[in-house]
Structure formats: structure tokens, C-alpha cells
Amino acid sequence: RIQKIRTTTKHKQESEKADKIKRSMSGVAKKIINPMSLRAALNLQSSKIPEQLAKSSAAFLSSAPSGGKHTLPDLSYDYAALEPCVSAETMTIHHTKHHNTYVTNLNASLEKLDAAVSAGDVSSIIGLQGALKFNGGGHLNHTLFWENLAPAADSELKDGPLKDAIIAKFGSFDAMKADVSAMSVAVQGSGWGWLGYDSKSKQIVAATCANQDPLQATTGLVPLLGIDVWEHAYYVDYRNVRPDYVKAVWDVINWDVVEKRFIAASQ
Image (cartoon, rainbow, N blue to C red; front, side):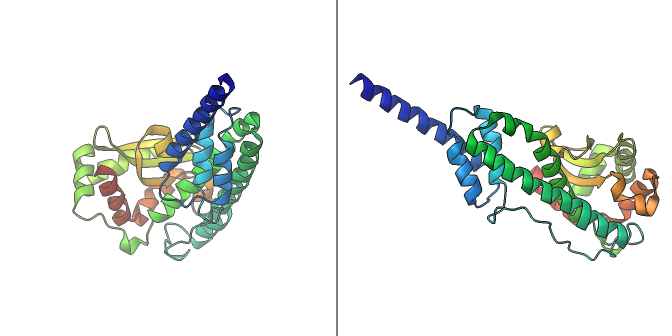
């Protein structure tokens, strides 16, 4: 009878662990769980892996599309569409080489994570966190970046909720550009300048992040507009003169996309 009680208690504990994992994965935005992440989720029930590490691993693995691999997104415009602000050469290298490298390395890291989780190898799981953050952030940041760019002829901030929010926070559109530009230019080494939405204060905020750190995961701000200030984003066109690049990039911002993000974040 004692053995039966112990067995029942053990099964109950395992069930509770499984339920926690399911809840942690349910917050991922409407992705079809692929075989890799499903297999990993089952293995995450192992008591070898701390709960928080199990949750983060499940989130990473379930973020992959249904095919199991992240892919380089297509652009909605030609590589030459942003000239003269950003050259076709820069766009080609930036998209097909740099962004593609983040995607490739992210997929490789996820495969290693899947194997480590399956083996209950806590040390390897911890060791992969840096690569997952860097390459996952690089993929996320660049995807947002391509979407918030547009040919100069289509770059116009129209009257509406975004413009009103910018004026309410910064005093004017030009003042906002000056603040974001100054912060972006001042980033030490490589990183990103951002316009984000603070859900607590209900305001638009200027911010920066180092390297490929994602804005929301790092600061809690919802990304509205990102400016890549890694040298690979501008060296071909502006050499090492970052201020000239930052000044020019404002001419090719897709304000319609930025406003849609703002409306979605503020609802």
C-alpha cells in the first residue's frame, strides 16, 4: 500500500511538471509545435533540468516555424529601392550575408539545444544561452528593421495616433528624431537605436541596446522602430561616419508600419 501511494505521488508530481511546461509554451505566438520542440518538451519533464531553464529551452524550441527551421525573410522592396540613402550593395550584403548568418547560426544553436535537452545536459544548455540570445536577437532585430524601411517616396508620418504620441512625449517630430539620433550615434561599439512603447507609462520612449540584444526582452519596451548601427549597416555607403548614416536613414522609414506597431502595442 505504501509503495502504491509513493507511485501515485510520483505520477502526480510528473503530471504537474508537464502542466507547467505546457503553460510556459502556450504564450508563444501561435506557432505550430514542430517534432523537435515536441520531443524536447517531453524531455523537459526530467528533474535534471531546473524549472526556469526548462521553460526558456521550451520557449526557444517552440519558437521555430512548423518546418523546424527559421528562414531568411523576403523583403517587400528591391535592394535598390532605398537608394541613395542605402545602396543596393549594402542591402544585398546586409540581408543575404549578415542576416542570413544569424538565421543559420540560430538554427544550428537550436539543434544543439534540442540534443542537450534530450540528454538532460544542463551544462550544455547553459552554454548555449549566449549564442541563442545573440543569433535569435539578430534574426528578430533585422526582421523588424527590414519591415520599418521603405522607399523615400513612401516615407511619410501622417496625422494620426503615432504622430500625436510623438509630439506629446518629445514636443515635436524633429525633437524625437534628434533624441533617437543622438542616442543611436552614441552607442559604443555595435548595437541598435530604438523607438519603443512603454506599456506602464503609456508613452513612446527612445532607447538603445548593445550588440543584438532584443529591445523587449532587454528593457520591456515594445519595439516600434529600430535603427541598426552596426558598421555593416552603413560602412559601404558612409564608411565609419555613423552620424551621416543615421541622419539619412530617417528618409526611408516606413511610418505606416511603425504606426501599426504603436496601435497594436497601445491597445
